[in-house]
Image 1 (cartoon, rainbow, N blue to C red):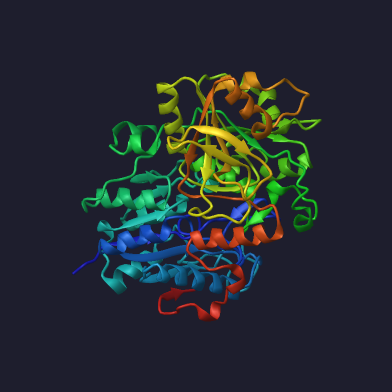
Image 2 (cartoon, one colour):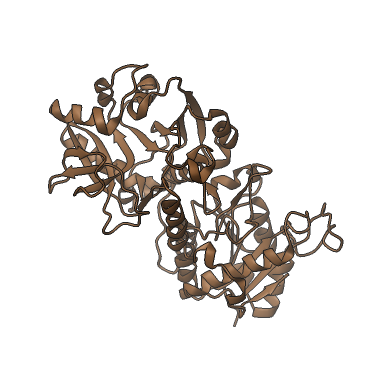
Length: 488
């Protein structure tokens, strides 16, 4: 009896792409330390497995042919991906890795080959070995070579709109479905395959028709956003050697890049980033933001204006469209549902116009954290904020997660530049004293501070643990499970 299968590209689909500091491009990881599984990937693949799909990885890995990394390193990374999947109950039937490249420099790995996508050799091999019905199967990838490969083999296809892969998508290939990420892709292809699963809504058109639209929150593509990245980075200077804190890599990706990717995944498309300390380095790293799927406009400050003063400087830009704007501290690592937070704020402001802001908070007893606690937020049982405590890490209350949804009216409580002003110490207390209200939004996820070497180490551990792999200090390919078949 023929079987259904799902063929998957790996990098950018199952695991995160890694930033190559030499080229500024997002590529396959070149070390175990740079490998991170994408959130939700393991659970999504387990859903496919439970729906009786065979799972195959089909991945072009030309870095060895190009002389960038050793073949032993690429094999160790592949073994670690397999280990992480098996730890989550997922078995890959066979992994097809092509290490050739037409312009390779390594003898034996340069020139044309049959296994490199968009060639279909791997899929036809799976068809013959495992009696796969390609017409009832799917190819899931984030590049046009993936979609072309699946189409040429007779499969249906899903394009994952990973913003880091956008430069490699011209629109030439037309996939059967488009998805935001692997969990969304799996939900959509299961629904299209008649399994009874319903897709997660993505994009404006999906939200217009999906019963899940309200749960995910509003479309944020028109929402104005300010990311703070102007700080002096003094507390972490011993770790970074004085480099800007927003450029500190966590699990292989700079903090600021992680935040831009997180914002892009939540629908934010345009943002302002304020700069002061070593501004040119940050601008060179992020450029126009296209590599992260966003458009960035820079706001340089001299003198530095503080967390609230930065927004006051951009008052006209942040309030031009009406409605609330978003403010995010660019030197922490975030992962929570931003759409839900914005929807919660808008609903509460609609009922009570005196609610001018919502602050994301976390509970140190329940949320993942790094032991670094910012300002505390005191609130009543209904979530209304009653006060703020700075400089007392043992004070009761939730911790400020450094992400705010703010109505334009808050800026009337901020003096104009060049006066420097801080939200927690000055502006927010001033608003409460004037009779305005703010709400605390308890996140489901994390905000990781990296202000000390110990908290930085903990952030690495937390991030890898949350993505389904062990800390890099314990990486050892000798312990990888080698039962899966891998083609090299």
